[in-house]
Length: 394
Image (cartoon, rainbow, N blue to C red; front, top):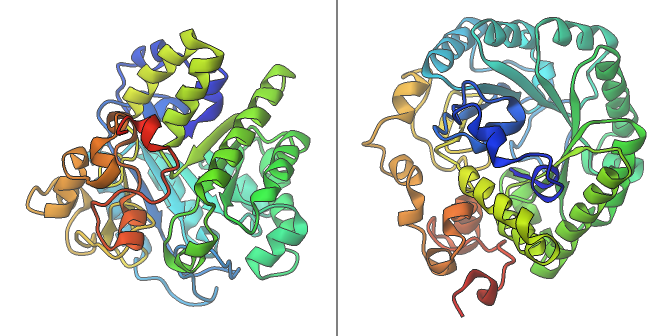
């Protein structure tokens, strides 16, 4: 994650992270990306079932009715292991996590063990009663996905009325005092909707929004030709920075982040070099704390069937199964070659990444995209939009 508001608008200083010793167990959530120990935030896709049929679903979600591979007792054993291991956050995702009847019970179990529990949802199933239950268990955050305005969103979700139901879910969360934010995945079909999302954030008084770059995974892999080209990506990132600055200067600051393309970090820094060189120095230090993409190190994923992956998008590589072996043992097993290399992937990436002056603060970007595009895990990320001149190889 690249905190546009934190970096570009100066809402976070390096001293903020240093004050906590950069220990992930002590850092507040908005500073976790700057932790030194990189204990993994664990995404648990607790079900493959979903009530929608999104065209860009990375999980190849199935129909809402059905059963799940991991039972409630097995899930609690999983949470016990993660809490003991020191994972700071458990993100309940899917499919749609709210189709599982035990979500509230398991979220409460995670918080009782000292973990922060968050959910990633389409928002359509968050009734007033459900929002109240989620608040009572101490849920830290609810991320609700939108793809644009009503027409675009419902087209992406393939279920009429999804947009209005998602907005009602936001309203219900706010009524209970739950922190809620928006999630938006950028592609050619909806890049023009970025201003609409900023308008919604302001009008609905939502404090946070994450703009996700497209990762070629699940049904999203079928959109590989609909990813933005490099010029379009730069234009969108510039727009996000401009809109974030506008809100900040009008006294309506929001937490704005971009996700899944760590070229955004150097890009923000280069823009600040022209606009505010002193702030640029501070930002460069924060980006060094961030260290870029952390798949297989600072983030991990457990699928609905118990399989462990480097992140939620990269499911064609499996390191073990929590139904057979604890996550903590799998994650720290040096004999799993790919997982071990991902913990020090700067030594293994090739192409432009290997020569890039920003490798220490980008981390080689997304290996899942490199493999999907080139058939080579260690190739350069095709979505890096920085020029050879900018990265210092020409």
